[in-house]
Structure formats: structure tokens, C-alpha cells
Image 1 (cartoon, helix red, strand yellow):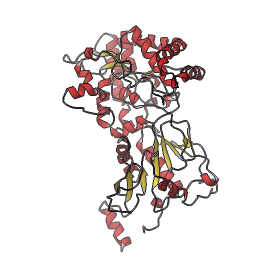
Image 2: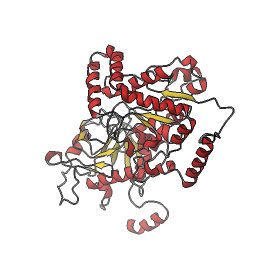
Image 3: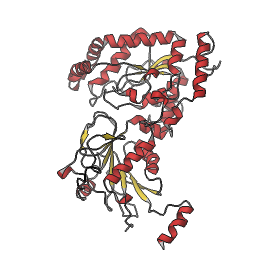
Image 4: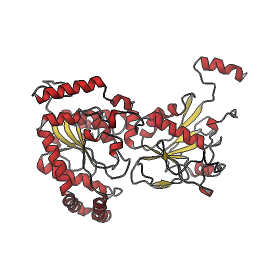
Length: 462
């Protein structure tokens, strides 16, 4: 009877396959759940998804009337209950295969397979236990992830071992939550022609490219620095680079700092700008209530509008690692005529067009020296400003060259507009892009298939 009903169900737009139960933990950050709600329908495009609320540790809520565990659990990972980890570890060990189906320890389509053998071998995803998905959002995370079936890793270099990894920096999560697709950032031939005409006019001292002139709009401000805390105990000394750069640029031309680090006199910041800062809780409260905590879709919209008020935004990362590209670049480079000033991922050119931003590049040797200078801060945080000055002296040549470039662009509207007219994506192409959710979903499917998940078998449900 079920076989007879399948064609009618498919014709009516209802999947004849059983639904997939996806569990969402009471995560410390709601961003994980928002992202999962966007991603999972792409992982299972032909299945109905039943969302299951879980406790922070991945177990069912006490009042859940359905005792069945979810098929997939999406959680931060660190808090997964020991019973879930044990259920994964006790699942059948997958055989090595014949070489064609056995994944190699390399990146393949944004998915990294570890070399797992013996007790660390991949485990089959059987009915009765959730497929455990975890997240590593911070670049200093690392270690053994064998108790998870899959981990989303914020970096492209491999700091975790013993589980499959998918490269997913937080900027990709932000992009998904804003429902944006990389193809929206591709500049069409018509738009390219329009920009070229506008640039030609600008060189003849006509109107600039980009934003329409508005007599009621206040003039754009010079540069923005938005960092909530100068230095945390979990930071690597790489984070000192952005502090030293801010100090050196600010000494040449004042920069607005609207976060908790190096904060400007906020009484001198126009109210229309403070209103756009999702982390300015004092101002928001004075206006009748806190609008946003600084994360999520609304915060990203506010941050993008805030960045649009400035010609330059310091979008430097807190660590220099391959693949670590934060949401600051996303908010600056895709929708605004604003130039990011960047430091961070050595491979940033794989994700963003390097002609569209200013990049502070330093050698690995100097990075190691920065880390040596910053090592004492773990125990001697009172020396922070002293160490920042030392980092600035060490990188003075690189930083001063970038500062000169910033000041020249600031004073030369034609050159400034030439840079903001560049498309944000490398080669102006959305193919195989980090922010393509379809590729990320395909990687999740491949990891499930490699684990011989019952979700992709033809066995009837119990």
C-alpha cells in the first residue's frame, strides 16, 4: 500500500520518504540554530524536516512526548552528553573499503577526511542514535573530535583530529542567516559598464561611483574600529596586530572606535551612527530599550548599515590562520562602498577579491616574533600597552605602508572609487565559493553517506 501511495504523494509535492528529525540544542549562541534551519533543508531537499528542541547537552527535553532521539543533532559540541558520545563510539566500525570509497586525509570539496584507523575508525550512523554535528567557531579551538560524527571548523588548516571537518568560518554563517547567495555579489556586465562610465566621469570631476548623492545625508566619516575587548586570555598574540595598527593610524588621522577597546568619546559621535551599533547597549537603552545583543540577522543588518557610514573599516582578525575570515569583511565588502583594511587569513585572496580591500601582510617569521612578544600577557596583562607598542615597532614598515595607502585613497576620490568599484569576489565568480550553502550542504550529505547513514539507505523505517 505504501508503494502504491508513493507516486501520488510525490505528485502532490509530499515526500514519500520518512521525515528527518533534526535536533537543535539550547545552544549558548542562537546563531547555530538559525544556521541549521537554513542549511538542513538543503541537506535533505526531498525530505520533510521535523525540528526537535534539545537540552544544551543534546538530550531530549524532559517534557518531550516523543521518546525517539533525533536523526541528526546540531549543537555546539562541547556540551554533548556522555551517553550520546558513547552511543556513537559503540556504533559499528566502518571497514576500510577498497580504496575508492575510503576517504583520504585531504580536503575534498570543503570536506576534510581524517586518516582514521583502528579504534578511531569512522562509525556507522545507525538508527537509534543521532548523527552528532559540532561547531568550532573560534580559531583557537582544536584537539580531538573523535566523539563527534562531523565538525564545522572555522579555519582551513586542520587543528582538530579524528573526525571529518567542513570549513565554515563565522562569515559563512552570517551570510546564510542573511539569506544571501554569492551570485548576488557577482557584478553584471551592465553594472561593470555603468561603473566604468561613472569612473570616467569622476576623473573629469563629475559625480562619484556608488551611493546616490543625497543633500540630506551627513558626510561619510573617515574610519571605524569596532572591537569589544582589546585582549582576552583566550586570544593568541596575533590580536595585538590590529591594536598596534589602530594606534598608528589614529595618530595620523582620528579613527572612531565604537567598541569597548580604545573607545572614542561617544558623546562626540553622531546619534545616527551610535543607533546603528548593535553593541552600544547604553545608547540603545537610553533610546527606549536594547535593540539587539550584537549577534544574529538583525545585528548583521545594523552592522552593515553602520559600516556604510565610513570610508574605511578596520576588519582585522584576531588570529592569522588559513580560512579564518570573519563576518566583518562580509559586512564591509559586499554591499557597501567602504574599503576594508584587513589582516588575517594568508589565503584571504581565495575568498575575496584582493583589489577590493587593503591587506596588511606580514611574514610568518614576523608573526612568530609577535607571538613571542605577546606570550607574557597570559600572566602579565598589565603590560598590554607596552607590548602593543613593541608590536607596532616590529611591524612599523608594513603598517606605515598600509597607512600611507589609506591616506592617499582618502584624499584621492578617483582612486578610492576605483577600489570600491571592484567586484567583491575573486574573478567576479560565485563558482565554488566559500559562502555557497549548496556546497556546504553537499559536504554534509557526503559525510552522512560515507558513514553509511540509515537516512540514505533503502531500508524501511522501523
